[in-house]
Image (cartoon, rainbow, N blue to C red; front, side, top):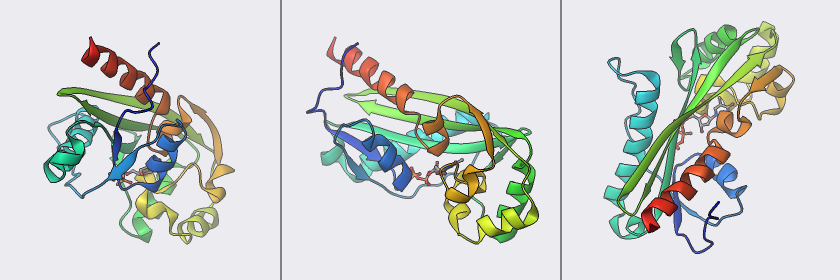
Length: 201
Ligand SMILES: Cc1cn([C@H]2C[C@H](O)[C@@H](COP(=O)(O)OP(=O)(O)OP(=O)(O)O)O2)c(=O)[nH]c1=O
């Protein structure tokens, strides 16, 4: 398998500190650029279609804003949602919404789906990765105590699997852990290698 060249100019199009930490785990150097875009889901599109479209729009917005910086770069962007009972859960906007989300998710299994997009040398790759997460039951005090940490507000589904107060309620996961935190690293690395191989063929 072709390795990712060390001199590849990689840019992470994201404001998420988690995505930055995750991409750093690959050992490759990269820079980050970010901007806000409308991340509203369209009702006439499926969940995966929405995630791939939004990830693509994040990268396109960065290309428009920074044409010079992005011209020869490999651009990575992503969007994550939590899916429970066919309902997509984004970031909770207030305490009640966070409590409603955790009440829904506790004691059962849901999916976390990340759509990611790669742009390189006029080529694009877009893909979704799903991980199933099973939670143990949580009491109302467990949930309110966790929400008080403020951590749910910038996370899809109102929780971070990586957060200290959440870890003891995660019964198990099926799939990529890093995908839950916001970037499915093995899938991203595999797709980068494929994109570089086709671009250089
Ligand atoms: C489910 C879950 C989500 N998350 C985070 C990952 C994402 O940062 C966030 C989902 O929001 P996103 O809209 O995917 O990303 P973002 O707004 O944080 O960053 P950007 O659009 O600039 O890339 O939820 C966790 O950190 N842990 C978890 O367990």
